[in-house]
Length: 400
Image (tube, rainbow, N blue to C red; front, side, top):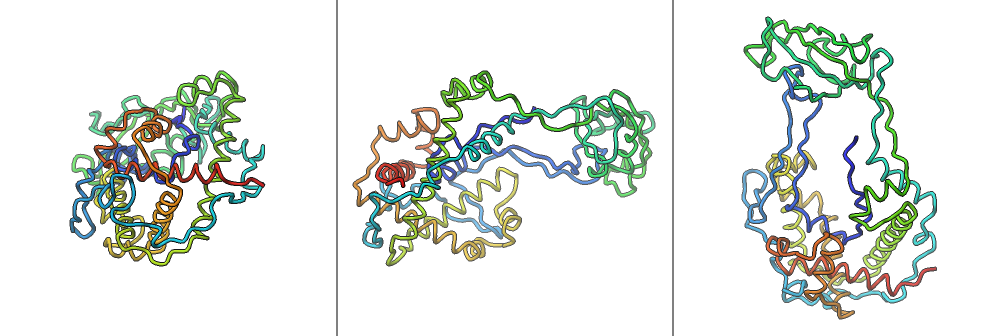
């Protein structure tokens, strides 16, 4: 069964929730199928690390080290930028009664089904074909034990865990996989190969080897689970409170509507607000947040920041990254400024009970002490202010 991920769309937290979670979570380790997960394969492994970085450590490109960055740095305890009144820089449009067109807030049955199919896809099971011969292009699950001169060698076995390969695509030494063509699942094949002279391991370079290989099954099409009350209760009742299929469909429809309206309203606000000047402190803050998030992402994959941003954007330094993403940084900083301006104008504020409610609804626990320790109260309140501002806009919108 495929990894049954939760549908992240059902939790419509602030768009800044990604930055809230950055650094706290670990990335899944992953290994390329052409990597050296065993001696049967030809190239070195590129395996991710599940280590996450500390907010106090930010290693910059080219070996430079940035000053330690805390997410609440430059923020007041109320979640606003410290010593900065956003309304001095922002002229807000009329934001009460923003008209939301029907095609935005109406979720069609087709859109609902498309989303539901995507959710079910995360629970799909791959069918197993066992009644025909392996052909070129097949995805095949196999187990093998390798030996040289009758002696098993390190890294030459799947240890019975099974591994899936694609005949003609996955790169194994010599014609390893092609020798499976014409055999059926359940058969054990004596695969004979010769390691390259420059394989990279002295004990294997140029050696003849035998891999006793069992063909477990050929992978067929993914089969979606039946969408019924039992499926919903088993997979979604605990996290989302849905008791049957109809409740899940209505929940998804409601969340899709909220997401569409939120996107429309903030697009309206950012396009119609007038900014006389973007304070440098706000733009600098956005840059630091970005670097911290990329530093965390790099660490999750066992990379330094320089390598990560070079792979992602083809740049070598943080300054080059700032230049390449200048428009995105400016837009993000302007949105932060507009959010604060709206909060100031509408007298929005975040109290302890608001934080408790936010984390209970979006993180599943009223205890946000770990997040506060990592990010600081100012940053948490900034995130919740966005949530409040979004709710305010939606509650006062006019749906056509």
